[in-house]
Length: 376
Ligand code: CO8
View 1 (cartoon, rainbow, N blue to C red):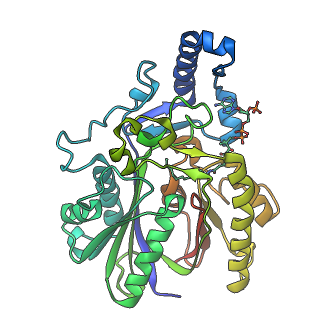
View 2 (tube, rainbow, N blue to C red):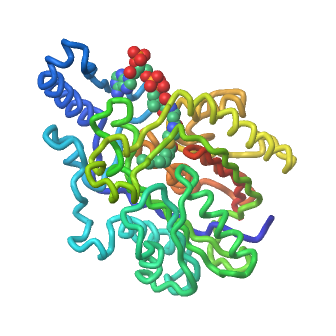
């Protein structure tokens, strides 16, 4: 496959950086209060004492040191333990959601890099893991905000939201359905986290990344990346869940039940998913008659540093340098579908004509999205 290029990327980073230290301090104060309030039940065996969280554990188990949040006070407020509404959130829920504002800010940067105006875009996708609003379509609102023509739609594929969105846009450009596409993965994840759960309270951050795609023959960019080939894969797994949805409106008392927030069997995911990622990448290399040495860089999904080290060690036969497989999750935490494209945005400017790289997302559902890019 040839002919479609990424001509611009842009990242919107939310305003509130929250460190592991801040999260652990509030979680531990919350757990201490909870244990005191439930002392009798704990003593009689009817409740299990909450153990403290720890900064060294989080860093060692995940590589995460901090994250950005659209609203940074609520989750570290011991009396609340949940984000408040973002300052960007409208009073009237039909007005522009914070998630669309995140998408717009990332899109402006990507359009600038691609040297394009909003009205030159004729396909807009917002591809994300969770939604601040179902209707009207957030992508249609973004389309209107940038003055794009053509059509827009929302789609989702969890950790592979950006790669599946890019692949969908490639198909539209190649079939002639569209001429210039904007794909935005705006991940506003912190509202679905459970900050009272020490196993997961540190995992996610908010962020948006935007990607402009065009036909190679039409781009004004001299630093665009051609998408050479793509491979997508899914295999159903319930090991990563956010089960919050319309059923919570049918049973309103469920709304604040933590069981509907993010849950995962982290170890199982680690064990089951990585062999599939390695098989898929190896199959991809074989099909395209490539070896790992052909690639200057691997922009991998950003869930857990140990996963990335494991995968690249298997593929490259050695622990990768930051140059070979950049890590951004230390600063941004897991940003679901956005992670590998944030890494691409931040670590692509040193590429020269003909340099090759591989973008690969992997995670929930399970899903894997992999494609090779070549600097024009
Ligand atoms: N502080 C101290 N100790 C802790 C903590 C903590 N915060 N949390 C757990 N522990 C304890 C456990 O209780 C356990 O104790 P014990 O041995 O006594 O039972 C011990 O530490 C070890 O716990 P784990 O086995 O759970 O620890 P791991 O080393 O496996 O690390 C991780 C946990 C970090 C969760 C790890 O398993 C992981 O990240 N795995 C990868 C999973 C993954 O990548 N999932 C994909 C994420 S999903 C995604 O990328 C996108 C999802 C899109 C939807 C998002 C919507 C929000």
